[in-house]
Length: 364
Image (cartoon, rainbow, N blue to C red; front, side, top):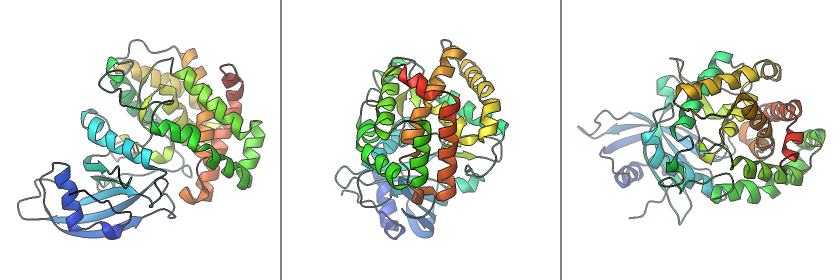
């Protein structure tokens, strides 16, 4: 029977969960479920998908070491605009995550429904491991950011310029090709322009850097065309600070893999540094942090990494995506006023500091 995925906590039933487990080829049989928290669109900290936290009781002898506390990630509403993101994240967790030895949530089953364009990912509840989910409203230490860069270097090194990206993993989208790219590069443009036109702080910040919405769109596409000719690896694609977590043992992981695909490593590196640090701290530390990342690439076996100067140029150019797609797309309702404004302010300031506009115009 086809699986019909819920879009709120009420649909997370014993029968539904057992059906999802069976579809995913998993053995446990759930006897009872207790919903602990349900967050859907309109709740702060819910952006492109909803999530339901719950505990389960397994039938006798069926637990087999499975966790009692789980999370289900599901479509945020009946609106299917985000469907390419959902299909992409299911593909990551079902096809790539099992072979990646890095800190990212474990998944116990996932499915994307092509008919309804809904999805579900059954995942570990990271709070049971003491995970902390940072925001731009707190101070992130340089040590913590280095741990995140170590995680990124491990991810990037795994498929660095690998023939697998052009062969077995050719199904992966990239910054110019695929449903996710179309949504971000083209379909999202009217939504972004609406945000620029109707949110006064976005109007002022875009005016401050001297680019129009259409110019930012064209510059972002030029960036993608340029960077597609450079080093390629598997990128997370959406590495703002809110998509990370910190564990008590010092490890740092990455959440929300909806934009993952083939891409240039500075896409990820520039976004995490510019959103994680205060403006003052970024200005002081970003060059050393980039050097640290490059050292970590080498430590993970990458022998043909670009030079610091070449990496710095692409790091600086990448800030146009961070501004245009990263946060101008994001309505205030997703994360609340202060987080939204703080991210915009950090990214627009980095755009100016790094002369991103000048560097992007060189490749347009």
